Image 1 (cartoon, rainbow, N blue to C red):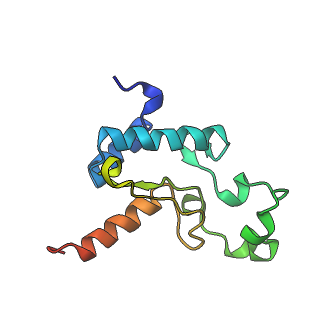
Image 2 (spheres, one colour):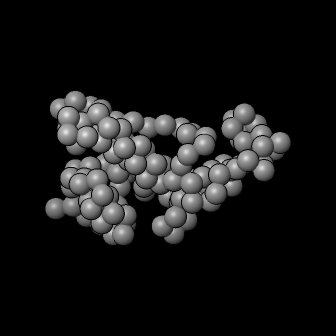
Length: 127
């Protein structure tokens, strides 16, 4: 039996199932990332914080990631947060997952899933 902490929040799990047809196993794996992101302060409530706010300027990686002279070029809040990794439906067999650190000009919690979905549609035989 899958417990509550092994599932994505209801609204997100519903969206993932309806848009990306994720399996219970994918949901459980993604929940581990969600919980880790939340524990690290990257998610507040059920929303990903913008990385330029969640990552402290004191971090040794902050200057190259978020230089102050680029503050006016920051992504909108809904696109600036951490994103969940894309985990393939046959992860157990193929071990394929994608975890990008910073997409820089594109983002949001489901950014990698949307990118993969768009790509899969373009390269599928029926697409």
